[in-house]
Length: 323
Image 1 (cartoon, rainbow, N blue to C red):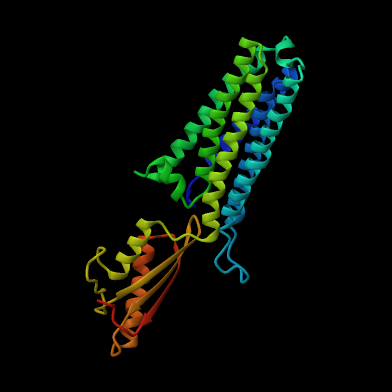
Image 2: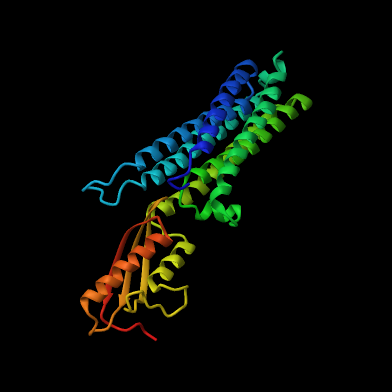
C-alpha cells in the first residue's frame, strides 16, 4: 500500500470482524460450542489488528525530526509485527487452549452444551452469515491489492510487498474464511454424530491455522524491520536513471560527463520512502563543476524513475569500474 492508497481494505475488514465477533459471542453464550468461542476470539483479535494497522499508518505519516531524520515510515512495520504476535497469542494459542480444555471435558463424559441447547441452530446460521461477510471483506482486499501487485503472483505479492497492510488483511481474511469452514464442520458434525470430539477437532484446526498464519506474517514483517532493499524493478530503474539510458547501456548524461556505476545500495525505510546510496567512478581530471552538474541531473532522473526515492546520496570514487 503506497502513500496514495486508501485504507479501504483495512476498514472493511475491521467492520466485518466487529459484526462477526459479536454474533459469535452470542452464539457461544447460547450453545457453549468451543468452536464458536475460538472463532469469536479470532474475530476480536482481527479487529484489534486492523485498529493497530490503522494507528501505525497514521503515526508513520509524521514528518521527520532531528532525532529521526529519515521519518517514521517503519512504524507501519512495527505495528504489523505486533499484529502477528497478537494473532499468534490471542488467536492461535487461545484456540488451542480451548480445544485442550474441551477435550478433557469430553473425555470425562461431560455433556456437550451444543447438543443439549435448544439454540443448536444458531451457530450454523452465524457461521454461514460470517462466511458471506468475510467473503465480501476478502473481495475488497483482493480488489485493493490488484491495484498494486500487477502481474506478480499472490505468494510473491505477500512476500515482496513493502506495504504491510494489504498482505496482513489478505492473510487474515483467508485464515478467517478457512477457520469458519473448520468451525462449521466441527459444529455440524457434532450435531450430526452427537460426538463432542468433532467440536474439539474444529477448534484445534482453527488454532493451528492461526499459529501458521502468524508465523508467516511475523517472518515477513521481521525482514522489513531488519531492513530490505527496494523492489528489484525499482533498483533497475535507479541504475538506468544513473546511466541515463536503459539498463546495460553505456550511459553518458546530458551534460557530457560519464556516470559509470560501481554499485547501488537501497534501503526501504517505509512503503513510500527509499534511501539510495550510489558510488560512481570518475576520472582524476574531470572538472568538479561538471561532475556536480552530472550528479544533480542523475538525482533528478532517479526521483523521476522512482518517486519513493526520498533520500539520494551519490559518492564519486576516483577509479575506473573493473572490467
